Image (cartoon, rainbow, N blue to C red; front, side):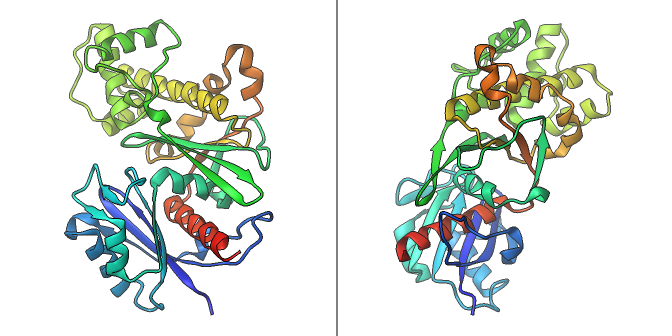
Length: 336
Protein backbone atom coordinates (compact mmCIF):
# COMPACT_ATOMS: atom_id res chain seq x y z
CA UNK A 1 0.00 0.00 0.00
CA UNK A 2 1.36 3.43 -0.97
CA UNK A 3 1.97 5.91 1.84
CA UNK A 4 1.44 9.54 0.86
CA UNK A 5 2.77 12.77 2.30
CA UNK A 6 1.23 16.21 1.91
CA UNK A 7 3.06 18.70 -0.29
CA UNK A 8 2.21 22.29 -1.09
CA UNK A 9 3.29 25.26 -3.17
CA UNK A 10 1.93 28.38 -1.50
CA UNK A 11 1.99 31.74 -3.24
CA UNK A 12 0.35 35.08 -2.71
CA UNK A 13 -2.81 34.11 -4.59
CA UNK A 14 -3.10 30.33 -4.77
CA UNK A 15 -2.21 27.56 -2.36
CA UNK A 16 -1.56 24.41 -4.38
CA UNK A 17 -1.68 21.04 -2.66
CA UNK A 18 -1.08 17.41 -3.60
CA UNK A 19 -0.33 14.05 -2.08
CA UNK A 20 3.07 12.62 -2.97
CA UNK A 21 4.17 9.00 -2.57
CA UNK A 22 6.86 8.32 0.01
CA UNK A 23 9.48 6.11 -1.63
CA UNK A 24 12.50 4.18 -0.44
CA UNK A 25 15.43 4.72 -2.80
CA UNK A 26 19.19 4.75 -3.12
CA UNK A 27 20.38 8.40 -3.07
CA UNK A 28 23.34 7.45 -5.27
CA UNK A 29 20.93 6.23 -7.97
CA UNK A 30 18.41 9.04 -7.64
CA UNK A 31 14.80 9.55 -6.70
CA UNK A 32 12.28 7.99 -9.13
CA UNK A 33 9.62 10.70 -8.97
CA UNK A 34 7.58 12.48 -11.64
CA UNK A 35 4.62 14.85 -11.78
CA UNK A 36 2.45 11.83 -12.66
CA UNK A 37 3.14 10.42 -9.17
CA UNK A 38 1.28 13.33 -7.54
CA UNK A 39 -2.37 12.68 -6.72
CA UNK A 40 -5.32 14.80 -5.56
CA UNK A 41 -3.72 17.93 -7.02
CA UNK A 42 -5.79 21.02 -6.23
CA UNK A 43 -5.40 24.79 -6.05
CA UNK A 44 -7.24 26.77 -3.38
CA UNK A 45 -7.71 30.53 -3.41
CA UNK A 46 -5.82 31.70 -0.35
CA UNK A 47 -8.07 34.75 0.06
CA UNK A 48 -10.95 32.46 0.92
CA UNK A 49 -9.26 31.15 4.07
CA UNK A 50 -8.48 33.17 7.17
CA UNK A 51 -5.51 31.02 8.15
CA UNK A 52 -3.18 28.55 6.46
CA UNK A 53 -4.52 25.86 8.80
CA UNK A 54 -8.01 26.48 7.45
CA UNK A 55 -6.77 26.00 3.87
CA UNK A 56 -4.86 22.80 4.71
CA UNK A 57 -7.80 21.29 6.59
CA UNK A 58 -10.15 22.20 3.73
CA UNK A 59 -7.86 20.40 1.30
CA UNK A 60 -7.60 17.31 3.50
CA UNK A 61 -11.38 17.21 3.96
CA UNK A 62 -12.02 17.82 0.25
CA UNK A 63 -9.70 16.76 -2.61
CA UNK A 64 -7.61 14.47 -0.35
CA UNK A 65 -10.53 12.91 1.53
CA UNK A 66 -10.30 9.62 -0.36
CA UNK A 67 -6.82 8.90 1.01
CA UNK A 68 -5.42 8.12 4.45
CA UNK A 69 -4.56 11.27 6.36
CA UNK A 70 -0.85 12.07 5.77
CA UNK A 71 1.57 12.24 8.68
CA UNK A 72 4.45 13.96 6.91
CA UNK A 73 4.48 17.22 4.97
CA UNK A 74 6.80 19.61 3.14
CA UNK A 75 5.41 22.94 1.97
CA UNK A 76 7.07 25.46 -0.31
CA UNK A 77 6.17 29.06 0.40
CA UNK A 78 7.16 32.36 -1.20
CA UNK A 79 8.93 33.94 1.78
CA UNK A 80 11.83 33.27 4.17
CA UNK A 81 11.49 30.01 6.10
CA UNK A 82 14.49 29.99 8.43
CA UNK A 83 12.46 30.87 11.56
CA UNK A 84 9.60 29.13 13.40
CA UNK A 85 7.49 32.25 12.82
CA UNK A 86 6.57 32.63 9.15
CA UNK A 87 4.90 35.79 7.88
CA UNK A 88 4.08 35.95 4.20
CA UNK A 89 5.11 39.16 2.47
CA UNK A 90 2.34 39.00 -0.14
CA UNK A 91 -0.46 37.42 1.93
CA UNK A 92 -2.12 37.91 5.30
CA UNK A 93 -1.10 34.49 6.62
CA UNK A 94 1.25 34.55 9.60
CA UNK A 95 1.89 31.49 11.76
CA UNK A 96 4.31 29.44 13.82
CA UNK A 97 5.36 26.16 12.22
CA UNK A 98 5.48 24.40 15.62
CA UNK A 99 1.91 25.44 16.43
CA UNK A 100 0.65 24.52 12.97
CA UNK A 101 2.28 21.10 13.24
CA UNK A 102 0.51 20.50 16.55
CA UNK A 103 -2.82 21.70 15.17
CA UNK A 104 -2.58 19.34 12.20
CA UNK A 105 -1.22 16.44 14.22
CA UNK A 106 1.63 15.78 11.77
CA UNK A 107 4.79 13.87 12.65
CA UNK A 108 6.78 15.98 10.17
CA UNK A 109 6.04 19.51 8.92
CA UNK A 110 8.76 21.43 7.10
CA UNK A 111 8.50 24.71 5.22
CA UNK A 112 11.03 25.55 2.49
CA UNK A 113 11.45 28.58 0.29
CA UNK A 114 9.69 28.28 -3.07
CA UNK A 115 13.00 28.30 -4.97
CA UNK A 116 14.33 25.55 -2.75
CA UNK A 117 11.46 23.44 -4.07
CA UNK A 118 12.04 24.53 -7.67
CA UNK A 119 15.71 23.56 -7.47
CA UNK A 120 14.79 20.12 -6.17
CA UNK A 121 12.25 19.68 -8.96
CA UNK A 122 14.84 20.03 -11.73
CA UNK A 123 16.40 16.53 -11.49
CA UNK A 124 12.90 15.01 -11.55
CA UNK A 125 11.73 16.76 -14.75
CA UNK A 126 11.53 14.85 -17.99
CA UNK A 127 12.12 16.29 -21.45
CA UNK A 128 8.47 17.40 -21.63
CA UNK A 129 9.02 19.70 -18.64
CA UNK A 130 11.98 21.58 -20.11
CA UNK A 131 12.70 23.51 -23.30
CA UNK A 132 16.36 23.92 -24.20
CA UNK A 133 17.64 27.30 -25.36
CA UNK A 134 20.93 27.23 -27.25
CA UNK A 135 23.83 24.79 -27.11
CA UNK A 136 25.56 22.94 -24.30
CA UNK A 137 25.09 19.69 -22.42
CA UNK A 138 24.56 19.20 -18.70
CA UNK A 139 27.28 17.38 -16.78
CA UNK A 140 25.65 14.88 -14.45
CA UNK A 141 26.51 15.34 -10.79
CA UNK A 142 27.70 18.94 -11.13
CA UNK A 143 25.76 21.90 -9.68
CA UNK A 144 22.51 23.13 -11.20
CA UNK A 145 21.01 26.60 -10.82
CA UNK A 146 17.39 27.65 -11.12
CA UNK A 147 16.32 31.27 -11.41
CA UNK A 148 13.64 33.22 -13.16
CA UNK A 149 11.47 36.29 -13.32
CA UNK A 150 7.99 36.45 -11.86
CA UNK A 151 6.69 38.90 -9.29
CA UNK A 152 10.33 39.00 -8.16
CA UNK A 153 13.51 37.17 -9.09
CA UNK A 154 14.35 34.01 -7.18
CA UNK A 155 17.51 31.93 -7.20
CA UNK A 156 18.63 28.59 -5.82
CA UNK A 157 21.34 26.08 -6.55
CA UNK A 158 21.53 22.33 -6.22
CA UNK A 159 24.80 20.52 -5.50
CA UNK A 160 25.24 16.76 -5.17
CA UNK A 161 27.06 14.52 -2.71
CA UNK A 162 26.98 10.96 -1.45
CA UNK A 163 23.90 11.69 0.66
CA UNK A 164 21.95 13.21 -2.23
CA UNK A 165 21.24 16.79 -3.28
CA UNK A 166 22.10 19.80 -1.14
CA UNK A 167 20.06 22.94 -1.79
CA UNK A 168 21.73 26.35 -1.83
CA UNK A 169 19.14 28.99 -1.08
CA UNK A 170 20.29 32.41 -2.23
CA UNK A 171 19.12 35.97 -2.77
CA UNK A 172 21.05 36.58 -5.98
CA UNK A 173 18.09 38.38 -7.49
CA UNK A 174 18.96 41.27 -5.19
CA UNK A 175 22.55 41.55 -6.40
CA UNK A 176 23.48 44.78 -8.18
CA UNK A 177 22.43 45.26 -11.79
CA UNK A 178 25.52 45.41 -14.03
CA UNK A 179 24.94 47.31 -17.31
CA UNK A 180 26.83 46.12 -20.37
CA UNK A 181 26.44 49.00 -22.86
CA UNK A 182 25.54 52.69 -23.09
CA UNK A 183 21.79 52.00 -23.27
CA UNK A 184 21.87 49.95 -20.09
CA UNK A 185 24.01 52.60 -18.40
CA UNK A 186 21.22 55.03 -19.32
CA UNK A 187 18.59 52.65 -17.91
CA UNK A 188 20.58 52.38 -14.68
CA UNK A 189 20.91 56.16 -14.43
CA UNK A 190 17.16 56.57 -14.85
CA UNK A 191 16.35 53.89 -12.26
CA UNK A 192 18.71 55.53 -9.76
CA UNK A 193 16.27 58.46 -9.77
CA UNK A 194 13.58 56.02 -8.55
CA UNK A 195 15.53 53.69 -6.27
CA UNK A 196 18.37 54.20 -3.83
CA UNK A 197 19.88 50.93 -5.08
CA UNK A 198 19.17 49.11 -8.35
CA UNK A 199 19.20 45.33 -8.03
CA UNK A 200 18.88 42.97 -10.97
CA UNK A 201 15.32 42.22 -9.79
CA UNK A 202 14.41 45.82 -10.68
CA UNK A 203 14.88 44.81 -14.34
CA UNK A 204 14.34 41.04 -14.47
CA UNK A 205 10.78 40.63 -13.18
CA UNK A 206 7.28 41.79 -14.06
CA UNK A 207 8.12 45.09 -12.42
CA UNK A 208 11.38 45.03 -14.36
CA UNK A 209 9.66 44.99 -17.74
CA UNK A 210 7.77 48.12 -16.69
CA UNK A 211 10.96 49.77 -15.40
CA UNK A 212 12.84 49.07 -18.64
CA UNK A 213 9.96 50.47 -20.71
CA UNK A 214 9.77 53.67 -18.64
CA UNK A 215 13.54 54.11 -18.78
CA UNK A 216 13.66 53.67 -22.56
CA UNK A 217 10.84 56.17 -22.99
CA UNK A 218 12.83 58.63 -20.89
CA UNK A 219 15.99 58.02 -22.92
CA UNK A 220 14.11 58.47 -26.21
CA UNK A 221 12.30 61.60 -25.02
CA UNK A 222 8.88 59.96 -25.38
CA UNK A 223 6.06 60.13 -22.84
CA UNK A 224 5.55 56.69 -21.30
CA UNK A 225 2.07 55.23 -21.43
CA UNK A 226 0.61 53.67 -18.30
CA UNK A 227 1.33 50.08 -19.35
CA UNK A 228 1.66 46.97 -17.23
CA UNK A 229 4.11 44.19 -18.06
CA UNK A 230 1.55 41.99 -19.92
CA UNK A 231 0.51 44.97 -22.08
CA UNK A 232 4.13 45.79 -22.92
CA UNK A 233 4.85 42.18 -23.83
CA UNK A 234 1.71 41.89 -25.95
CA UNK A 235 2.51 45.04 -27.92
CA UNK A 236 6.07 43.84 -28.42
CA UNK A 237 4.98 40.45 -29.71
CA UNK A 238 2.40 41.85 -32.15
CA UNK A 239 4.88 44.55 -33.23
CA UNK A 240 2.53 47.47 -32.66
CA UNK A 241 4.88 49.56 -30.50
CA UNK A 242 8.58 49.99 -31.21
CA UNK A 243 9.49 50.92 -27.63
CA UNK A 244 7.66 47.87 -26.30
CA UNK A 245 9.60 45.75 -28.80
CA UNK A 246 12.86 47.29 -27.60
CA UNK A 247 11.81 46.72 -24.00
CA UNK A 248 11.15 43.01 -24.41
CA UNK A 249 14.34 42.51 -26.40
CA UNK A 250 16.36 44.29 -23.72
CA UNK A 251 14.62 42.29 -20.97
CA UNK A 252 15.66 38.98 -22.57
CA UNK A 253 19.22 40.22 -23.11
CA UNK A 254 19.62 41.40 -19.50
CA UNK A 255 18.19 38.10 -18.25
CA UNK A 256 20.85 36.35 -20.33
CA UNK A 257 23.68 38.37 -18.81
CA UNK A 258 22.36 37.76 -15.31
CA UNK A 259 21.87 34.01 -15.91
CA UNK A 260 25.43 33.85 -17.23
CA UNK A 261 26.66 35.46 -14.01
CA UNK A 262 24.72 32.86 -12.04
CA UNK A 263 26.47 30.11 -14.02
CA UNK A 264 29.87 31.62 -13.25
CA UNK A 265 29.09 32.16 -9.57
CA UNK A 266 27.76 28.67 -8.87
CA UNK A 267 29.83 26.76 -11.42
CA UNK A 268 26.51 25.47 -12.73
CA UNK A 269 27.77 22.94 -15.27
CA UNK A 270 24.67 20.90 -14.57
CA UNK A 271 22.70 23.63 -16.32
CA UNK A 272 20.90 26.89 -15.66
CA UNK A 273 17.11 26.59 -15.57
CA UNK A 274 14.78 29.55 -16.12
CA UNK A 275 11.53 29.26 -14.19
CA UNK A 276 8.74 31.66 -13.32
CA UNK A 277 5.55 32.60 -15.10
CA UNK A 278 6.87 35.23 -17.52
CA UNK A 279 9.24 33.61 -20.02
CA UNK A 280 6.99 30.64 -20.99
CA UNK A 281 4.41 33.15 -22.29
CA UNK A 282 6.70 34.12 -25.19
CA UNK A 283 8.92 31.07 -25.49
CA UNK A 284 9.45 31.18 -29.26
CA UNK A 285 10.44 34.85 -29.05
CA UNK A 286 12.75 34.09 -26.13
CA UNK A 287 14.56 31.34 -28.02
CA UNK A 288 15.34 33.79 -30.84
CA UNK A 289 16.35 36.63 -28.50
CA UNK A 290 19.81 37.65 -27.30
CA UNK A 291 19.36 35.64 -24.11
CA UNK A 292 21.77 32.88 -25.07
CA UNK A 293 24.40 35.09 -26.71
CA UNK A 294 24.47 37.32 -23.64
CA UNK A 295 24.63 34.23 -21.40
CA UNK A 296 27.83 33.19 -23.16
CA UNK A 297 29.37 36.66 -23.53
CA UNK A 298 31.65 36.63 -20.49
CA UNK A 299 34.91 37.90 -21.97
CA UNK A 300 37.84 35.78 -20.82
CA UNK A 301 35.39 33.32 -19.22
CA UNK A 302 33.14 32.89 -22.27
CA UNK A 303 34.64 29.44 -22.76
CA UNK A 304 33.41 28.48 -19.29
CA UNK A 305 29.78 29.32 -20.06
CA UNK A 306 29.56 28.11 -23.65
CA UNK A 307 29.22 24.40 -22.76
CA UNK A 308 26.65 25.09 -20.03
CA UNK A 309 23.09 24.39 -21.22
CA UNK A 310 20.15 26.66 -20.49
CA UNK A 311 16.54 25.55 -20.23
CA UNK A 312 13.12 27.08 -19.66
CA UNK A 313 10.98 25.18 -17.16
CA UNK A 314 7.54 24.50 -18.67
CA UNK A 315 6.37 21.77 -16.26
CA UNK A 316 2.87 22.28 -14.88
CA UNK A 317 3.59 21.81 -11.16
CA UNK A 318 7.33 22.16 -10.51
CA UNK A 319 6.76 23.59 -7.02
CA UNK A 320 4.72 20.59 -5.93
CA UNK A 321 7.16 18.17 -7.52
CA UNK A 322 10.09 19.85 -5.79
CA UNK A 323 8.31 19.77 -2.44
CA UNK A 324 7.70 16.04 -2.99
CA UNK A 325 11.40 15.54 -3.71
CA UNK A 326 12.41 17.43 -0.54
CA UNK A 327 9.95 15.34 1.47
CA UNK A 328 11.35 12.09 0.15
CA UNK A 329 14.98 13.10 0.64
CA UNK A 330 14.34 14.23 4.22
CA UNK A 331 12.47 11.08 5.18
CA UNK A 332 15.06 8.90 3.46
CA UNK A 333 17.82 10.49 5.58
CA UNK A 334 15.79 9.89 8.73
CA UNK A 335 15.10 6.25 7.99
CA UNK A 336 18.43 5.34 6.31
